[in-house]
Image (cartoon, rainbow, N blue to C red):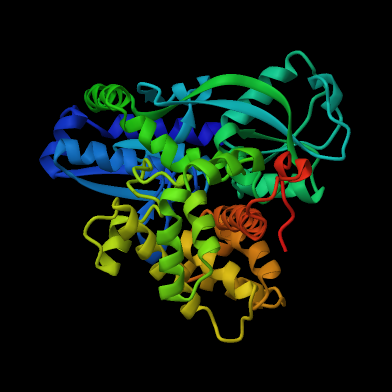
Length: 464
């Protein structure tokens, strides 16, 4: 493979004669051609076939700054990126690439825009290795063409008997699945990949940190790519200063802890201090739309902790955190207004409930409506279709909640109409709301009574 790359590079060098600087080429053609790879950490097609992903967001912003059109080519595997760049078809590679010596032989790298940790991953229940010596002679598989291969090669200089398998036909998510199913004992994953995949492979664990602060950067052709590299560096440095990079990272990785459950003690404190000013509005909205007001209040708490001025990095606002599109759909002009927000959220939830199939009974109907409120009804439909393919019951929340996380796996989201979704989020979302709802039912049924210590101290609840 390495020989083939060198021959390809030599051929390209021999046939090119003093082309204009790459930045000039981009500006003259009006196109920024970018190669990336299909992965939740780089680029995927989301609802209705629209592209999304951190690399897409950043390169689109860069293209907008240059005043040119973004033309993006997604590849299946990271191992395809370098050969593609050597064909000269792309101006830059934005594919979550680490800066490695082997890649620097052929490409120039710009300003690092993100730091990731490199984890050695194993399955809970197996003996956790305490050092690299503990994995010598055991099964290790990594994705070919990645910095993970370079890491293992450097470790073999110290542990000569260390062996592994390189697979060019998979992505990190696929190998993590092999570890989760016991097919492979270990793999290596960047912290960004692991933070996503751990939600639907809960038995995966970090055994060792092989590297902390591994830089990711865009890659450019050597030589005539320097002009575009310098302009890209200016863009990324400005993006770091003005908060654009932070917002992109939060959008795609901040969710990993987004739905952490707030302990009952804190919830009760907010019940006493924040809810009273909105309780009557929740009650009125619940009566109007035929929804238990305590469920609406539980949604509001999950969304904003009952803060009327809450704003997320993605632009949703208010107690019920309505998006601008949802507010427009509901005819709401001021979505920050507490009354508008609560009534809007109640109406939107009621509409999701009506859209759930008539064959679904409560409480499953309620949980599916909540999932649709969070992730969108079309993704819920996709998850129900996956349940049918798996031979399960699409009317049972227990089956649908197991299928929703699969919408983040390529082998599933490429088969359904509405594509990729962070499907574990609605599952956590529903579980949290069910817990808050249970506490609210207890509190309202026992108003005026002292709160038992076992309720007040509880930090996790079993929902029914």
